Length: 435
Image (cartoon, rainbow, N blue to C red; front, top):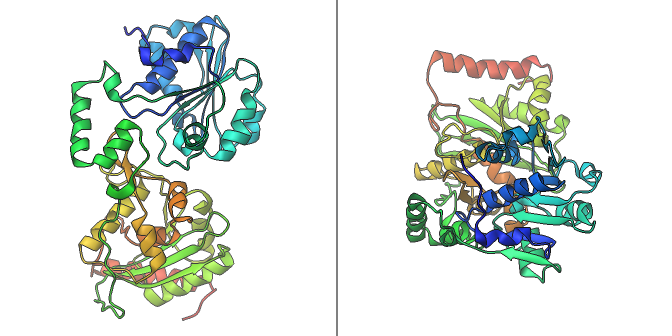
């Protein structure tokens, strides 16, 4: 049975001289284990109200609750704690661990009374509003502390601006260590780190030294080809329509139609009202007879597939956050689609000379996650680089999902022809269109 022994480099976690304790270390320093472990050990000795938070927490599974539970069990403390679905209590001291996201329920966080320690995880995702206007007002009582864990991607991140780029608040302790400072770092970990240091030095500096992300080595799409002004098509070319729905003010809804190795047409609309999109897509289906219509159903786009049924338009809902078809290579569906874009260009595909689309593809970067699987940086991070979302690139990449079929060539079978005819007929049967 393991017994927790905090690394000396994190002994200042126990110091009452600091109100802000910030670990911006690289991987392999043990920061998460030491921060969480120290919180549990304090909770066993004194009454403590701990808020464990991050910007996005869609469910309790996204929180650090499972890691804290494992620490409790591994160190033989199971009988001391009561663990419920959403909280953890210490039976003796009355300490409580609360798990909440910042982005979706800011008013709920403000209503939590007397937080002694607030722990921010994945601080690179924290917005200035969440940090300054939501979280910090909850820890203003004497003796309360803010603990922060993460690895800032950009100097524009809220945590980097507050604690690194500008003079930090009084009573701040910033930990900055590497895996070399951790005596428990395994030989295997060191071999992997040294290999990345040799082959991808910019990535190494970010992941293992905690430096800002240098995106020069991390493009998802490295090969972009501009198609002919008047591309030629084959009768058996696969035809796919991709639709990316606007989410924030100023973002467009984009529609791309791909045939084989070229884009036939693309459109951009400021509105995402179904009364506008329905007729546009219905007419496109009648004109191009696609094999698939793929619609981004992530978040705000989840309403569209059902709404389009009224127009007789059967679509494939693609959730960018869902599991990839090849989960050993890509962390989620969005990353996989951009990986398919690279394959598309390597295999002779092209796009129109659209500067917006080209810039968005060139600005789509990834970093390996903790399992060393490629994961694209968030749309918000890309927005910080190019001052907009990747709506055109998303619309284009949605045309590359062919649901297990060949990317370029449709099946010239009776079954395939009947399927396309049914798609067209469903639009006509809606009564909203004529040939």
